[in-house]
Length: 272
Image 1 (spheres, rainbow, N blue to C red):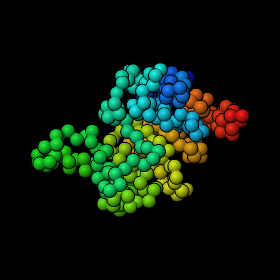
Image 2: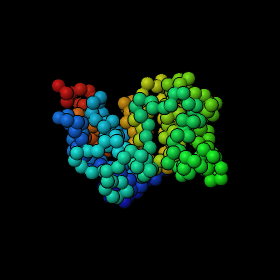
Image 3: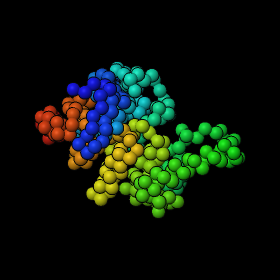
Image 4: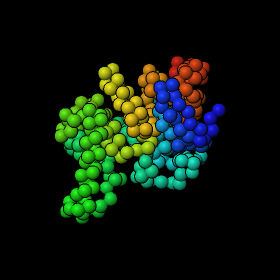
């Protein structure tokens, strides 16, 4: 059994490190509705960690707790070995956590390049006056941020649409632009909320490849919610399974696949 600081090498040669983030006995309520009930699990450095479950299981609520958007009534979120105090989402972003959304949240009237540039806000240190004058330090900072964004655009193979307004793009490319914006923040932990929802087979294959490349080439730790079980089992190092706000499974894809509680939840047996 691994402890908090142990690391190991996967079958494909990737190194999974110690615990980056730990959810300890998280309970989240909205009035009388319990969205999450006493759930604990961790996310390790360098892994791809999936959160799955039927509709209404509490997955997005959990992602919102991880990102700091929701604060649980009970339990604690630990980050790099310390309890995380109450923080606003922008403060969580400053810790190196970025995310995409289930419903695409882009600036439709802006170009792809400008949308991706918004992901660099935490890397922009000069004030508004300096940026408006675009001189000296502000000019150098702008150039450095644009270079970083162009590298991401090349990495995700969206050079040909860099000057295209996002509102004119098909759905699959919008999803890729949203991933680019999240990557522009240079996150240590990337949260993906249903990154392949609504995509066709070819688009899912492309997105799966990019997720694996982000994890491999950038060393980014990834936590994702996804309904496509084939994708989850192929991409993930470990999977936590939720149902009606409770954790019913946690382990490798093979362990989760053979868990009777998980089988029952997905087949609907436990709901009878």
